[in-house]
Image (tube, rainbow, N blue to C red; front, side):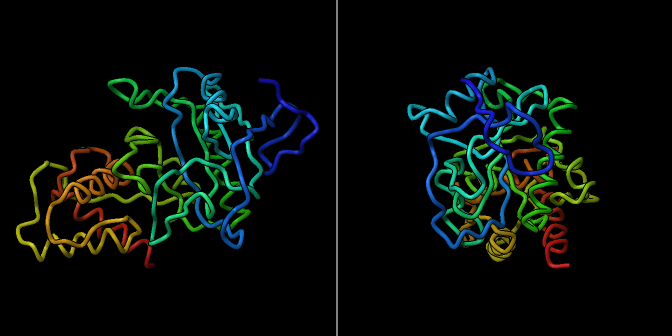
Amino acid sequence: MSASEDYAPQGSVLVGPGCWVPSCNFEPRKNDGKIDLLLLHYTATPTNDYALELLTTKAGGVSSHYLIDGEGCILQLVSEEQRAWHAGEASWAGERDINSCSIGIEIQNQGAALARVPEYGRAQMQAVLALCKDITTRYNIAPSRVLAHSDVAPLRKQDPGAHFNWELLAQHGVGIVVSPHCEPDGVLAIKTADELLSLQSDLAAIGYGATTSGEMDPLTVAVITAFQRHYRPALVDGVADRSTVEAISLLLEAIEA
C-alpha cells in the first residue's frame, strides 16, 4: 500500500513524508469530539503488511489512528479528528462508545496467535512511548485513561498482553503502574460474598465493566484477568489472590490521589 506524502501527520513525533497511509474505515466521532482516552492494541498479525491490509481496506473492516511496526516506524492511518474502528464492543467507566472518545494505537505483534506473546522490541517501545507521550500531552489524557484493549473488552481481548512494558511508559508519566508487596500465589483471597462484592465494586470504580453480583461469574474472572495483564502481570490466572487484591487497592489510591 502506498503512502500519501501530501498530508502533514499529527503530533511532533511524526515527521517527514511517508508517514500517512490512509484507511477507508472511519467516520465522524459521535460525541462532542472530546478525546480523553488512549487505547493500546497489538495487531495479532504475522507481518506489518498484513496489519496494514486489515486496518486500511474495506475488506478488513477495522482501523486505528496509528500503527507502529516492529522497527518502530509510526504510520498514521486515520486523522485524530475522526472515529477509527479499533475498540469494537467495549466499555469503560460507563462509556460504551470507546471509539468516539479515544485514540487507538496498533502495535505490530503476533500476540495470542502464538503460544507466548513475543517481546516488544526496544525501538518499537521507544516509538510507542514517544507517540503516547505526544498524544497524552496534547489532549491532557489522565494516566488512568491510558488503557489496554483487554481493559475495555475483557471477555474478547488480550492485547497488548502481559509482556507489554507499561512500566516504561509510566516512568515518563504515561499510564500507571502499581507494585504490590504480596507475591502472587494464585490462592483465592476472597472468602465471602461481601468481600467479592467489594472487590467487584472496586474494579467498577477503576472503570472496568464489572458486574456487582457477589458471585465469581465469567465476567468477573475475565475482568480480574484483564486487570492482572495490565497491572499485576507476574501471574495472569484470573484468581483474586492477595497480590491482586492489594494491586487493585493501590491502583484505586493512585487514581484518587
